[in-house]
Length: 265
Image (cartoon, rainbow, N blue to C red; front, side):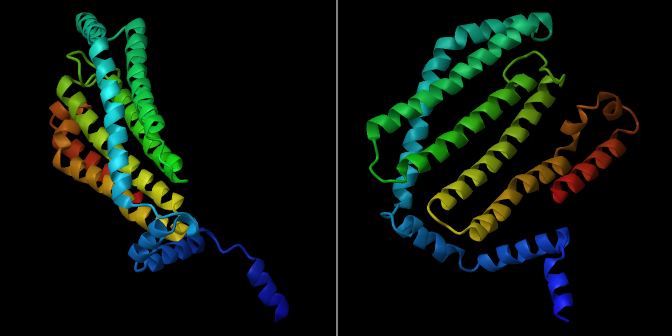
């Protein structure tokens, strides 16, 4: 009997059992989540001075504003160069390698300007709280990731240019694809940043996971809604199927497949 119990204890519970236990732990964490979050902000990591959530929101907003102003100033200075690249790409019906490299360099300058503006704001403010640098770094890092994603998608789809982007979509389809993917990416980044902030102030991992699981479903629900409501825009990426007699069937099939994939994720 003892040998049988030892064998059961040492046996691998399997993937389903592991995920089942994790999901049960996440579900059990939900009722106490508001109280635990409030307690963690009142005494971060159990020993540090309290963090005022509203003050954190104000500082975060000011950091984003300073970074955005710096980026805006640089964008104005680089506007003539960007307009020249856009005109050249329109004439050539697509960006050349040199034009694409220069466009990416201009985008990198914008991202760098945002970081410098945010850094200057932090240096001037110099908040005294022990967790201030870590919390604002989470926000700054999430903002930089969002900017890189947005600039990359803009480059691929040419959403701000009359020419086709690198993925070959028409102007309307490129803009739609750009907007949908940017919104979905931003939602994911916001959820991730909130989860990291809660983890930084000492919220237990199961409760952070509970919030991340619930918040992480929002971008995928948004994408599923877009797939079903704006299937015509998606079908523009498949011109032959969209214009032929099988267009509606192809759109419905694509919508169903994307829905199954996103639901699985």
